[in-house]
Length: 422
Image (tube, rainbow, N blue to C red; front, side, top):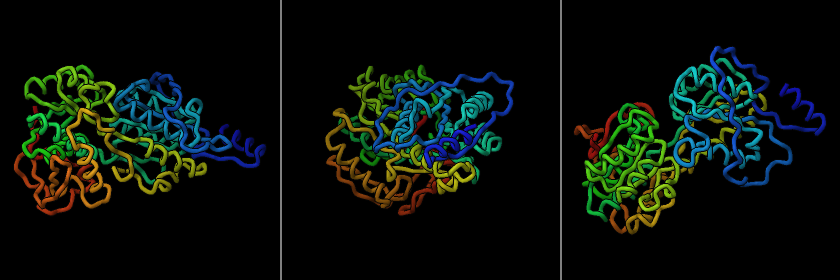
């Protein structure tokens, strides 16, 4: 019916835009079907004039938390999707369907996917790592639909890709801000509330990036890590941050978890913090320094445009993207740090800008055998020095290149020198 309607419109208007996909019939399921939740208005105005004619693309999204969150992981993704749609002239009220609060359970995820396919979605985004198996299977079952999975590693060469970014680069910048604050306070102890530690390369690389950034400023900095064992657990996110402050006298607390609770705990305890996923200054104005953030619209705009460029053939999506695994960083504007607050130590802006320039230019990357030394006045110098783990093993020889992307995204399972599990 979708193609027939598009054809009728084309006959009337003399031309039309046809998106990837066609009519789709969900696979039978004995599971209850979750209700589709339409999006609210877009979070950003279009950056350019929208097309004179509506673009025939229906976008679907599966969220792990509520689409109404005001900070954190799902909020950042939802903001990215709606912003990208606005930039492309898509109407989020009529061309976006969402099923949110979907746990990392294959049956629940598949039920959500079936719902979105039934809604006529041409491309479906899944934002959580644990959605990976359901998305991979759905890509086989619905070859006429595009599936794009965040933070995963599976893909095919047609209608299924994965996407993530170099969050460790933004973590390093946040670590620089934390390290400068630790010097100002005369306290070497930093805290980190992590969803997981070495179980996942995603969390492991983030911890290591932050620690190395802090140590570039304060070589004596120690990062104490408390692992939640879950991507989101608001009660323990607060409790673990409080424990890091009380037990280890941490003066700055950062996080890899979904809510702003660690920043709120830092504010309530009179210390400082670095958030994650989105700018958390509003949640803890007296404590927040900066946050490692995602500009998810950079990816979502690219993927939606590729979907439209497929001209009705979902099997061409990976080809249009140019890669089955999107992996952008600071250079692409995909990750960054939020605006530095007045809570930061003097010259933090200069230091962060200097390090960012080195990364964006391609002259240097975080997990290499070249160590940065960031002075209190914001100047940066380099030294050939080995990258060591906290068990005394050499990971990269002095002067050696950064570890490969496949390690950062898939097999990194060590913590660097100066990181301790709390």
